Image (cartoon, rainbow, N blue to C red; front, side, top):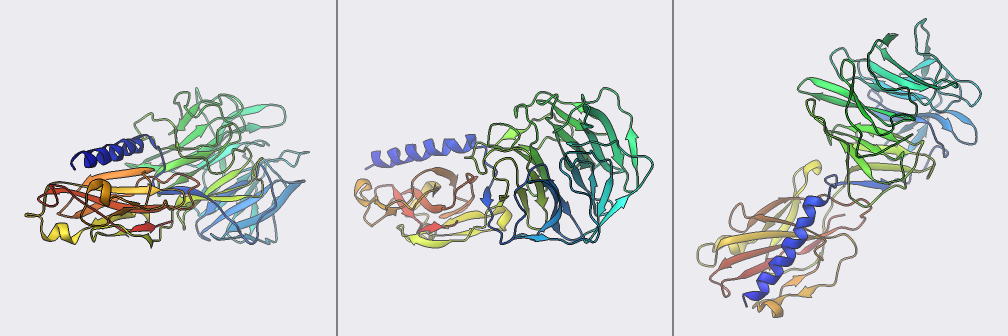
Length: 452
């Protein structure tokens, strides 16, 4: 009678050890969108968030020819805009949000014949060209990002002018360009990424990674360039990245042969590296794609690239909804609680709660067991465990979370990370108590729920 529970505990604890090695983004997953309207397949376009219109904006790129269309993402579909004035067709340009003015800045690019040095501003409805005597030279495959540091601005670095890679640094103040004098900065490069890291204790910075030279390097811009170290993310070129404020990290995808998603959460005083998630891959690996954070809907939007050039993917918190699909035992109840961004799982057994002294006492452990595929056939635990009542376990121990009770019969657990690509997710909770009935061992299980 006592040996069977020990065996069950061992299996659960072995499975729970996987949680520490998962590296999943908590409750995050890639989802392939199916918008009714969509831009044509393309590479080397640019995307950025526009705060006042609350939309992600996409411009240009290379399809069958260089493109000059402007699209905005509504959260469910792409909408083609019709501005009266627009930049010339191009690809390999850069775009970034100017958070001091709430407008988008576009610079450079090429149409395959000429390379541009023009600056354009998107106000949410139309494009306007900015003319000034001082500005970066003509270039393509450059990168720029908002600089979240006192004084702000947009920092631009590098690119290719048709004769070779560039290594100069420029700052957009909100009204004009000025060249930044730096010593010991990155080597000239193109095809790199730059992504902001919002302020931490009043300090923010820009992270730069990859490119045609120093492709394994990580650099940080805080009042000048600081070399970090060769990154675990390896050499990358023409990847894409965006800063996710909800996650508190920069997110990077593509640009190399692996299809993992990488995150960078390094603190202002730390030298942390890009960290890979070990979840199964979502989108196929690609280059020449673009990413931006949809700040209204708390998700990252990715479009296009060398593979899946017409695909729209989103990366964000999973929309959990629960429905009963199987039955447990012992009268235990369960449910999701808390806000969507931090949704948790609560289990409660009134029998344990009502008679904690005489019936169940001492050790109480709660288990949340997930299944990422189809709902497994229920296994009746009554006979092998010698229970006096029917007790059915429906889900396989793909992932297990374990906690002790906050109160008799009351368990509240934060959901573990969810692997990418999971489209069916089932959850069931179990409770174990040691007491006077039956035989110093008590087991109950909640109904099985589908939550995704």
